[in-house]
Image (tube, rainbow over all chains, first blue to last red; front, side):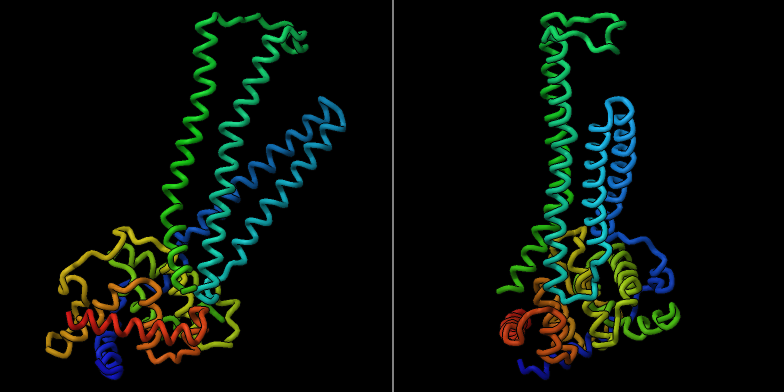
Length: 207
Length: 157
């Protein structure tokens, strides 16, 4: 089939596509974006403000309760979080859909991979490592024979029976693990398909 | 650029968006979402549009980038009948039947092939296609040749 034929047939066919099926152009610029980067930006902004509030409060609390060293230490942690999240959010804000297709898709692919990694690290820290460390520390304090901290001296003493201790230990180990793996699976379910699709497109452009 | 000027420019080039939607999106609901998303992304990017390239080229880039990052709810296009997969406004004649076949054949290509052949059939030069897609001119020429061969096979079959 000659090239002219293809172009001729295309022109004839495309004339029938002029109908925009009644979509409202004016309203479109006021609509809310369903773009994946916007969703990530929204979640990051929530994380950003949560971290700001929590780490600032902790910093002030530690400064008053434990002295300047811990206050300044948490203040530095706050600054690291602050710049890290600002960097991530600004990277998304700067993204322009009008760029070359290959470069743009590569960027989105890299963003998605990085954010999935970010979510997974946050997930493992929040739902697995922190609960394990916290409960482990609690058990250590409870069973090490160390003198009770001041705040616990006037509270009634409670000791697990052997079976209660096994149940508590089982829950403490299994529950965070299940939550972490479940959330991990959900993240993969939401983003893996899109990441794979983008990877296939970018690879297709390279060949 | 004011909102009014922007909207009139998009309206004038709406055919580009409609073409992309037809080729890449199947359900009406997804088409509406994508239409809004493309216009919205164009509106957000308009401040960075310097006029170095034509408005149509710029809109093509936005449309392709937006549509390719979107996952169709139905996944891959199913082997629909020509009647349901093609525009209803087409008059039935031998010539339009071949047009239908061509459009359906293009719709079945992968995302990259669709974009390249659409630009080619819309009279964009290989240089312009290379600039929009971000690959070399030679690669564009090779791909167009390959896609045309595939289309010929599909049209005969």
